[in-house]
Image 1 (cartoon, protein in one colour):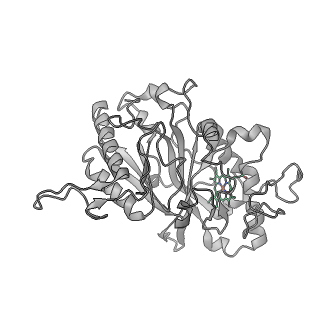
Image 2 (cartoon, protein in one colour; image 1 turned 180 degrees about the vertical axis):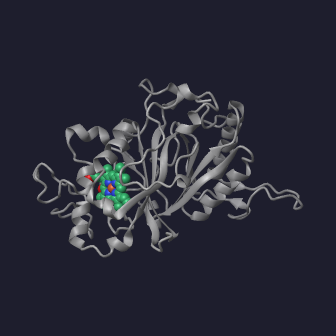
Image 3 (cartoon, rainbow, N blue to C red; image 1 turned 30 degrees about the vertical axis):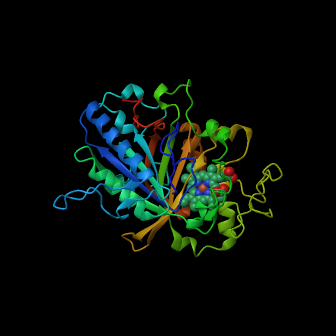
Length: 370
Ligand code: HEM
């Protein structure tokens, strides 16, 4: 019931529909050599395969610590869980002798001009993206994984996000609103289109990337605070000009419905949709920028107050692409200096590489790498 397949050429959680809850946990690896790292990845694979499939938890002597937190009851149910494991650039440093196998574009996330990166919420040797119908399922999975990795890995930072639950049913074709009140995802790549995904999301065999990376994808995670108090005091017309879309319908400015193309050819000087509008900078829809398309997979987050007493909420931006430079880096470079920056502040995240999938039982995540 509600179980996403674990085995396949690609990992789940990238083109699969977005359920309501996400949890990102970045890890520092404590394993000291390649054997220990392989051990870690094997255990992790075994746990994630079980958690995605679900099943009864073994009964043991009650005088011992229970094998499971019990958070989901005596039978773990899948709840649409997907677990996606990615590696950070730091895993390819001197520790494991993997330097030559680093995906070509993978480096440590650097600061863009509007970023206020907090080192305690950035980077990591590993990144685990958990998506499920409920937050409890993600938390259960994280606690299970941690319990099974003593001395091998420790959580460096984590963050949880949410979407309205009905997206699950619509197979990702619907759009929901982000915390600025605008529909998010309208012009996203269609994750159900395998040909598009092969071109823009998955690393293919035989290219410039190391052979082991085929079937994987570059993952970008950015924790972007939105300054909602300021946004809520901004006139609607200005908000719409900044984004380039109507707030209520999600349609491009001057167009009637959400899916209408913005038609930049008919608006070369930006009279209708400003040249500096978020959507126009993000995707000018020109022949030269077609190579920059990315698959976005963002969630909202909200978690208490900042030290200055403002609401700490925003967008847990995530995207996947076959080439980090042609994808996120090109898009973010075009966005730098956009007017939306007055209302957003990226504070954390990192660049990672989502490992190829595990083809069949017995295999493990990262097997081709180690
Ligand atoms: C489109 C909001 C950050 C890339 C949009 C849309 C909204 C939006 C409302 C229009 C609906 C849609 O097509 O999804 C935001 C907010 C952000 C943010 C509030 C930060 C808090 C980013 C970042 C990137 C990005 C960091 C990539 C570097 C895009 C792209 C589109 C888009 C590629 C589609 C443009 C098109 O094809 O027409 N964003 N965005 N956005 N955004 Fe963002």
